[in-house]
Image 1 (tube, one colour):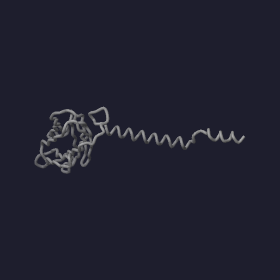
Image 2 (cartoon, helix red, strand yellow):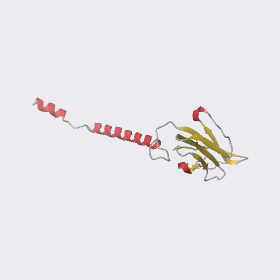
Image 3 (cartoon, helix red, strand yellow):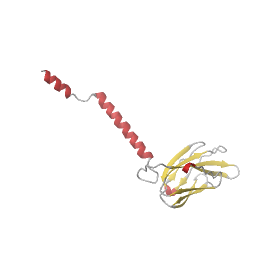
Image 4 (cartoon, helix red, strand yellow):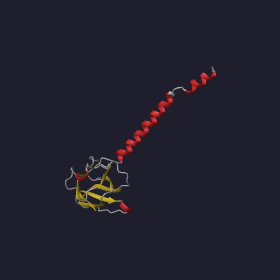
Length: 164
């Protein structure tokens, strides 16, 4: 009779609390994997790219003499290259790298909404209000010189050159 009780204790089903705990762990792990894969997939690729990105900062401002312009700062190789308030801000990057483009609206003069588009790499930001920012990752996989521009302010434009 004692043996039957021991065997019965060994074959008890998993408790309800254990099932809830396992479900929570699986949901958190699944959410984490989805987040990592979603944020590691550049906008112009179908699969994740696990590489350290080159950070490029493009700042939209209003200059009283030139109107709406892009300013560009790059932190590639721990250097900053500021093209400060020029109407044709150009960016040079090597082919095949992952680019993390940080677009910031710093128009404190007119508080206008700003955007940025690079059609060849499927980069299209939202319309950002003053001091809003958006980061978009893309893979610089095509050699050449491409334009980036604003749909809202046609005078805002620049070029991005992907070097071999």
